[in-house]
Length: 239
Image 1 (cartoon, helix red, strand yellow):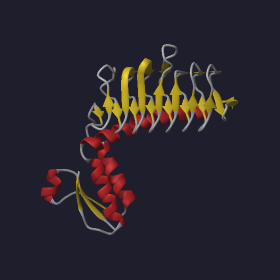
Image 2: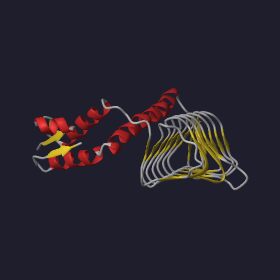
Image 3: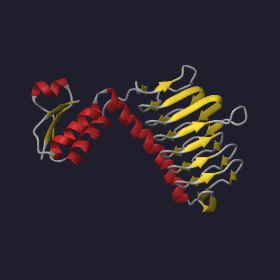
Image 4: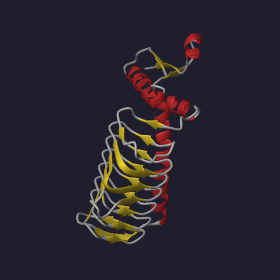
């Protein structure tokens, strides 16, 4: 199986490009190409909604069908992934540098009582809810977790997938927390703290690749090249 991928008009005219023999090589070849292209500094999906009052950096990445409303301030290199809602309509929301809010998460506040503050280098996993709470720097909030009003998650903590933190709880720094309702299992290890930072760095890098792909119709090309290789089709994909 193979696909022939061209990456520019010059490639098309000169009949040059990348020949790939399977879908995995197609993805690797195209993403390697993205790594060497200039990265636009600003990318917000046209299918997202961002209120004019939101304070945002030039290197923000926002995926399709996300909503960011009113009194929200986002730090450098923040990425907000598909379908997430960040709603600062009843109090303020602050999200620090190098933090990622993954798909379908909800960040909200407690009306006139508690804002939501998320620190630097935080990963908020898919389908999480953070409601009027504080998450300090370098935490990992696992998929499907719920952190309720006026709770505080200490720096360097891991909240495991599906954990419920009820209102007014104070989780000490460097805690591994699991359960619904929660239990503090132990302190996080140095290896786990390194993993939290790596997760932040990974999402910064990945969001930049998404920016290049989305601004250059790259995702359509990538999908087409993969299909061509899967079904043994000879095809040309213009990136």
